[in-house]
Image (cartoon, rainbow, N blue to C red; front, side, top):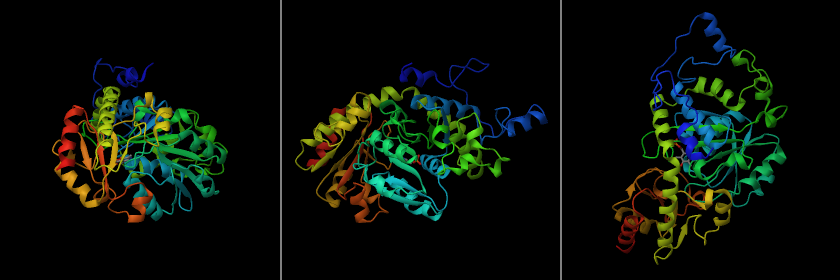
Amino acid sequence: MQLQTQALHAGYDKDTQRTMAVPIYQTTAYEFRDVEHAANLFALKELGNIYTRLNNPTTDVFEKRFATLEGGTAGLATASGMAAIFYAIANAAEAGDNIICARQLYGGTLTQASYTLKRFGIEARYFDVQNPDEINALVDDKTKVIFFESLTNPSVDVADIKAITTIAKKHGILTIVDNTVATPILCRPLEHGVDVVVHSASKYTTGQGLAIGGILVERHDLVDLLRGNQRYPQFNEADESYHGLVYVDVPLPLFCLRARLSLLRDLGAVVSPFNSWLFIQGIETLSLRMREHSRNALAVAEFLETHPKVKKVNYPGLKSNSNYANAQRYFENGMSSGLLSFEVESFEEAKKIVDATNLFSLVVNIGDSKSIITHPASTTHQQLSNEELIACGVPSGLIRLSIGLEASSDLIDDLTQALNG
Ligand code: PLP
């Protein structure tokens, strides 16, 4: 079945009321039939709802629908994209371990990896997403994760997914990809050997800037990588916090199961049922929107390339862009999403242009149907040093655009007056 069909139907078997819209189950808890029923649910002898921190029927539809779009076997929704990233990494690594991350990452992910995970005893090592071979020299027997973005925010690079997963497989290491900017409509990393996909649902999934949320999706047969793999004792040995459960022995998608039973249960960054419902609404139009975002962004990128004040345009849909070949290889018909960036002479010049736009909103978000402009060096990436900024592809004169669904001619008119002003 085509993705645009699955986006409307997957994961929802109309309930007893035959509702066309997925109902919102706005509840904290669920009544057990009797004590035996409750005991069976806790022992995983029977699957069912216990408490909304662990599961919820509306969220269940969101998880199943999104996992279907990614071509995965199960999903786990979280309160934010940052929580999804943390849970995915913390499910694989613990104090004393290390993870290998692309340098070109969303600023929040970089600070989570470099500072917060460090406080939990997990070391982040970095490779250049344009040079996956660097990974080999960083791997040791404590390496638990290789993490990268399929389409990087804000440097707008396209990862050579196959090259990275080939290296990861050689070492038996789990790969986690943030597929937020590409979305499963444009790119399906699991088909290229990735093990776990994470998302901020706060971007294109909600689509209109309505809700914060995240999700992680696990590939089919992930147990093949984890069973007997000495890097991952937590999946092979008894989990004392869950009456001795051995995850590789459970006939369920084990990565999401462990993240749910330990991390979601104990840390509790759960998505609200209402937000899951908003994400379901967003998914219904995701394929239409991603095509239009991509078409509009290409038109704006082509315009910017011709402007004398613009030093460089980063958009993988441009033939002149160094990521063009990867975009053609990994993205549906080469469509490259709505994110692009361009560089002007200086920090001051960039600030002037951002302030002069009218149609673009100055917002630290992406993936809204309304166009957004950001100056990463003074906002999302403010915490990074100059060296870190250059290393992750965010020079101080860089302006990021998230191209929305307005007419591209109106967006180009607005940018023209801002650049010429
Ligand atoms: N990943 C990417 C690529 C992002 O752009 C963002 C937020 O901008 C996140 C993750 C974090 O998501 P959230 O804001 O939902 O926590």
